[in-house]
Length: 371
Image 1: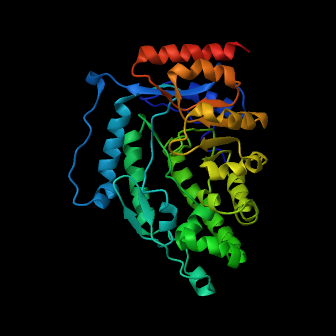
Image 2: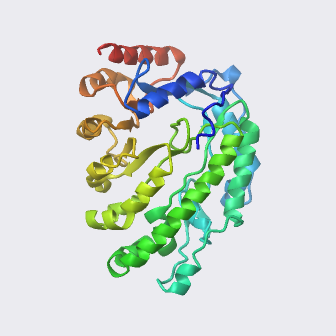
Image 3: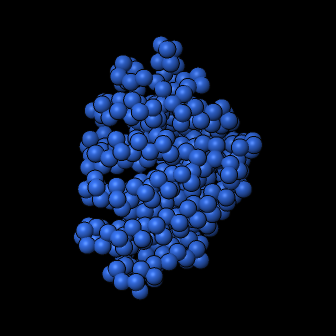
């Protein structure tokens, strides 16, 4: 169901959005409209900037839960940034990467910059499993709805609002159970894990559709924390828990759920996080419903040129990819290393103004012309 196919998007902070959307659509198919996809941002001139809200909160948790403050802060941050080329002015409600598990009763702990959940699945008895139930009336679900509404109100005709970071499947079960306990469970209780994963996947798709329909009705294209977009349903499947298990366990326990998630969507980019997950790349590239790969090498290992062989493997299977960041001085090296089809440079570092951004964009346009 492509609710947004005939919608005419108008955003003050991205007046050329329709043109950019066409580039994203081409990128998903490893095609090019006029040049490869590239996102470049730099600070707006001081006289065009908006003051960032300041507010004292009694606790860190209170700050996370303050929907109006978060929406106002997001609006100011986006106003103060120039979203050049294919960069999108996106805000999304964030209550931490394990928030999906909180819809089942996991309580959340909040730090300065991240959050984590408390396990609720003490064992694999039928009674314990039956208590793991989705509750869309829960505090955290309703708080996300409130935050989404606040962002929509601020963003109307100005910027794009996306859905929150949702982790279903193995990552949700690891949050229910505790990752170390789940490691043992993959040996001792694999059938119970598969049964729960099936249940969680049904719930996940229901939750996704609730937010998709809400945002579509507000005139928002589909997007989230990973700032791509498409015509229709966009999703970022992931399974960070997979780094801790064997290839065989990943295939048996979690690949079916990942495929089911992806088949529900129009476009998917898989979040492949860390060197221990890289062994799954070839298997993921075999899945037709995965259209692109986000490769995240990990802290201290994130220099793009060290992973050219990985990018070439992705290109060889006619899949699109996100390259997280490239220094402007490395663009010529990139052009010699990869073909432009299916490449999204999602950040060009070392750019601080429009003149530098335009120079980088001219170089990228020449990369296309070599064809």
